[in-house]
Amino acid sequence: MAKPKMIIDTDLHPVPIHERVAEYLDEPWRGRYLRGDHGAGHPNLYNPNGVMKSDAVTEDGRRIERSPETMASHFLDVYNIDYAVLNPMESMEHCVSPDAHYSAAALTAVNTHFVEDWLPVDQRYLASVMVAFSNIELAVQEIHRLGAHPRVCQVLLVSGSPFPLGHSYFHPIYEAAVEYDLPVAIHPGLEGVGIAGSGGTAGFVANYLEWHTLLATSYMTQLVSLVVEGVFQKFPTLKYVFVEGGVAWLPALMWRLDKNWKALRSTTPWLTRPPSEIIQDHIMLTTQPIEEPADRRHFQQVLDMFDAEKMLMFSSDYPHWDGDTPDFALRHLPADMRESVMFGNALEVFKIKAPQRVG
Amino acid sequence: MSARSEVFVAELTDLPVGERRLITVEGKSIGVFNIGSRIVAVLNLCPHAFAPVCRGKLGGTTLPSKPGEFVWGRQNQILRCPWHGWEFDLEGGQCLTDRRRLKRFPVRIREGRVYVEV
Image (cartoon, rainbow over all chains, first blue to last red; front, side, top):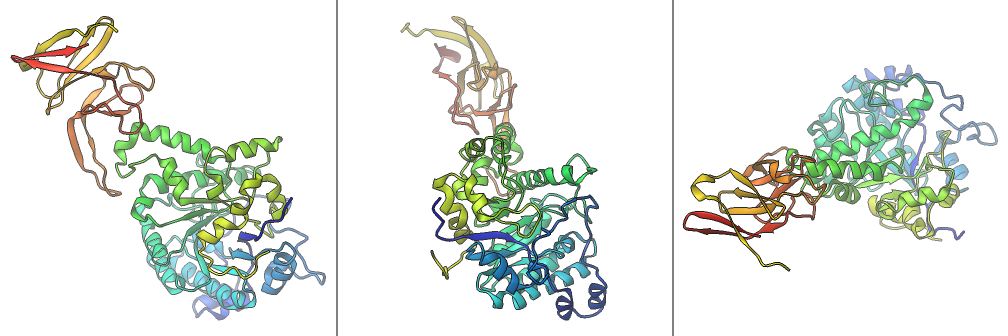
């Protein structure tokens, strides 16, 4: 299989050095952060794999994701990755905290940590501006603080939310994002935590297998809400990146939404064309965890059912337990889509101006 | 092709704005509507699932608008199919959310009487 000319990883997970993050905080937040308050917690469901790959350690036993140098040498170099979007772990939990002022302060410090301490180390890193749901004014302030930074490439939210993200409560976030021409991304994992809704839309589930499978339902909810509430009519330049939420469910949802729109259009008169067209113009999906039917051709048939070539972007999710390496993802993609998915779409969505290495 | 025949529907005064008549001509069910601007006749068959579309509600609808805004218009011109809710613009027969349209028949009004050409 021919190697793609470039690889852009749209979902890489560094972990901050908390002592360093604390240096960007004032009291009363610094002490609280140093005592280990890293947000609203976890769903308290058991994954025997752990969340982080057990082999993501250096030869001398350090975790790879905890330093920009080892992440570069032990992951980006190994897989020839040209750019990687940093979606920080042990941090997203603040996005769903009910404590608006602490979570906003903590996220401001985390964002600063990655901008100041990771970006300068390696040109391949792109940073996110991560914001919390509990106070929209503070979220908007943070986007204004970092939105113009040349290597901040997206506004990062989580896919578990107090109510679906098309609601007008969230629109100031989108207004600020488009001001800086930044896409908005959502990342899973906080479903059922803090002020976020449950993992399954029918209620709280009892098992990590259920929870992890049903993360896709958060994305279905967010997608339908964003489109139906007219977010893309109001912000016609906005792109929304659905990170790690699955791919194969999309065509069935588009069909269902279009069918319902044909009967119910009058309740949403701003939707002047089929919702599936709006979806294909504004939504991006990242590949990992790529669906693996017993017959690989079935996945490729699903990709024929929507504009996958324009909508998919490669993601590794490294170093999470269920991550996909670039070569693994490539084996699941039709040959004519590989360039767009491995880098072409990400270059466009993240407005990466000067590829620093090609081939 | 059989010759067209002209069929009497109603006195115009008996068909006020927003009202309809259902007639059957040579086995075809046809709905004749007063949509305010004029009288229109359409085949009583939804092109989607072959429902008796002319038994649906005639009314207005929401016009294209900004998110969160609702502008009512087209009163008495929009027919909503009773089976799946598709809206049809009786001015031209076009569905508002699909490329399919209703089959139309010419209407003549002479001396205050409404006729349909079938």
